[in-house]
Length: 164
Image (cartoon, rainbow, N blue to C red; front, side, top):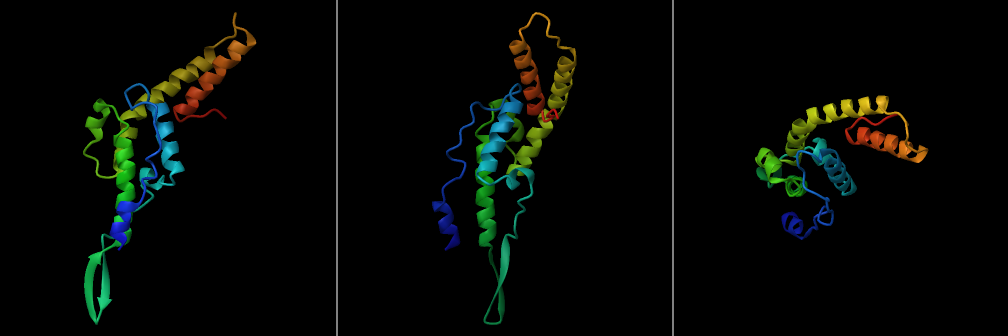
C-alpha cells in the first residue's frame, strides 16, 4: 500500500543542518544554506512552486463503475512538501516564524520569507555597490585590499546580485 510506505521513507532533509535560525540580520547566509540543502535533496521545486500538486483523488473504473479514490501520487507529493515546509519552519527564529506559521505549503512559506526580506536585500546591494565603488587601497596591503574587495563581491552575491 502506497500510503504505508510513505511513513517508512526517510526525510531527505533530516541530516542537513543550518548553522543558525533566520533572523532579521542573516537572511542571505540562511537562504544560501537552506536552498543548498533543498536542492541537494532534489526538492527545489517545492520552494519555487514548480513541483505542482497532483489531483487529490483519482477515478478508478471497476466492473463498469467509476469510483473516486485517494491519489497515491498526491500523498507522496504532500509528504515531500511537508518535509520541506517543516525544514524551513524549524530553521526560523520566533519573530520570523510568527509571520510564516500559517503557511500550508513550502512554496507559500518561501514566498512570504522572500517578500519579507526583498527590500532588505535591495538596500544591502545598493550599500555594497557604493562601498565597491568608493573603496580605495590607501594604507592597506595588496592582500588586505584584495580580501576586502573579494568580501564585498561575496556580499553582492549573497544579496542575489553577483558581480560579473
